[in-house]
Image (cartoon, rainbow, N blue to C red; front, side):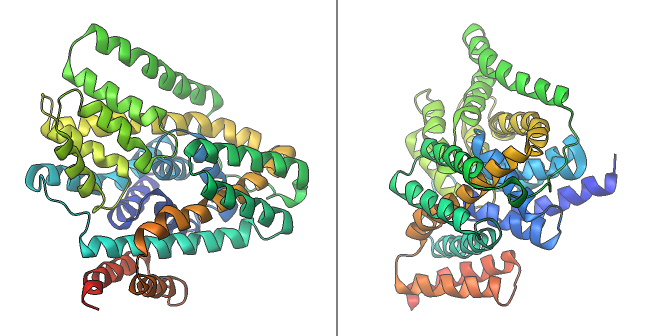
Length: 394
């Protein structure tokens, strides 16, 4: 076990957890900048492979990408530390919100609007960079453009899965293997037998927890079951999980709609994955365990499926990725992912952030700071937050 690598993974992911505002699509931009461009832990192609894999899996896609990179860098413990670092800041902040800022509405705060504009610049940079590498031919560009149009016309996580599958089929039929991304594969330190055990554990928990909940009337079991199912059954992550979470905590009487929406507003104001809203919900839950214990239990439950699925799928992805025919298909998938990200750049990232010409101006400034002046993303985020505070006075 390489202690230095483990600490490095924790340190880098913690910094990302402190600075990654803007939702899962923006997180992928931050990850690409840190892991691919700056640290060169993996290539653009390997990063796109991981993104494509995590798009196929239910759960929080950006967190799963971080876990996969951590596993590739420092083994299973590295994946765990990558998750801890990325989620810890927002977990702490949201439990603090639950304790001290209950009921405060932050959704219309100027600085929060500035963070949303920063996400526009981050995602635009990611789409531009990935398109230059992964959709730079006529066929791959056509796949990317078609995927973007389809994702915009029918915005659904299930449609996105269909787009990725169709892109893979087009790549398999239309792209030559030796021009499709070669053999640059992120190595997996996990064997296939171990991966199969992780996948079996995922399925066993999904089936057993509801039965245990019905047999044993215990709030801790009910809490774990509700949040585990939310993490296991949602494709697309982010805001898509909100209905399942609300359904888990409000009808059961664990909290009111107002409490839930206050937590959702707070979750928009903190960095890291939106799934850490579970920390607020577990902390503010009426029955015990609540408080810190409830928050940590809810967070562990909602993210456990993501870890089990990534650790289980990576060994098999590593094997099939080496096949020439699969490389052709994957080149098509990568182009499709570029299209999906381009669609997400417009809706919801652009449409939710750019509401006036002044917003567009701030987004251009942030994009220029990232691409021309090469400022680090966290500094661009800070500048955008200050700009968001100033926009109402312009």
